Image 1 (cartoon, one colour):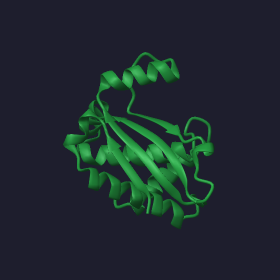
Image 2: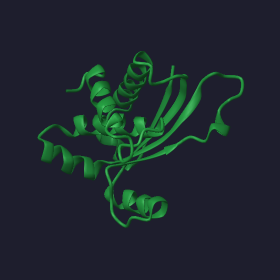
Image 3: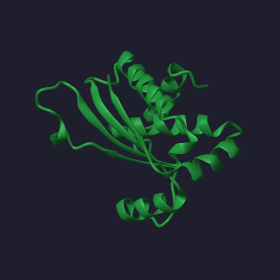
Image 4: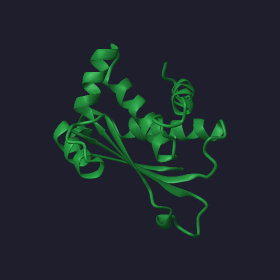
Length: 150
C-alpha cells in the first residue's frame, strides 16, 4: 500500500486519513486505466498558506506570486532497488488559493483540494497541460470521476 505523508500548517482543517485514502484511490484509478505502470511506494502532500506557496513558486519557478499546486516529482535515484515500487514525489497545495477557487467554482474546499491532488499526481507522473494538447485535462476528468468526484 502506498504511504501518503500529509503535512503543513493547514493540515488541521483536513483529515490526514481522508487525504491519504483519496490519494490512494487516485493512484488505483490510474493503475486501472493503464496510466500508472509501476507501483508507488510513497507520496507527500503538504498543505500550506499563500505566503509559503509564494516563496516556493518564487524559488523554483521564478514567479513571485502564489499558485494553487506545485509538484516536485521524486528523483528515481531515491527508489529502493529491492522494491518494484517507487516514490511519486511531493505535492504542495495552497489552501488559501484552493479556497478562492472553491468559491469561484461553487464547490467545497475539500472538493477543490481533491481536484488539486489529482492535478498534482498527474504532474508528478510527467503530464503537462501546457504542452500536451489536452491529454492531461482529459485524464484529469476521467480520474476525478473514477475517484468519486464530479
